[in-house]
Length: 127
Image 1 (cartoon, rainbow, N blue to C red):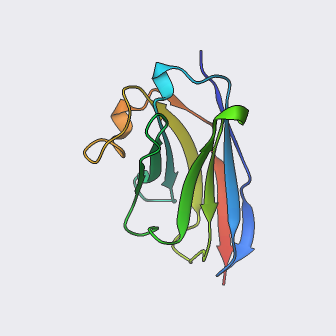
Image 2 (image 1 turned 45 degrees about the horizontal axis):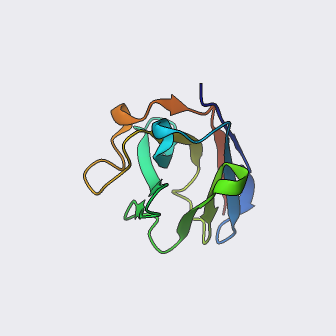
């Protein structure tokens, strides 16, 4: 089975940056799409960003577009989420997940289609 382990969370001041990492044990058809999701207390889990690992096509939530960047290093079996200009609305538990058959404009944030999930890494932003 593919296993995902997130790291890189922490607490930073508003306007600061963090880089999250998601290390995968292997890349198979099950992770043709890799995504980052987040869930704040009292809110639904939402898609943040996803990447099609074969085409490198990227997708972002409107709320993070221009501030966050998702990338993939296949040599390290690791997907990253570079978060710049962090805002008070960004604190949440961030999860990495994988999806078979790639991700596209109509499926990149469809949580029910993602098979494997990491345990999450906490991101906090202080004013």
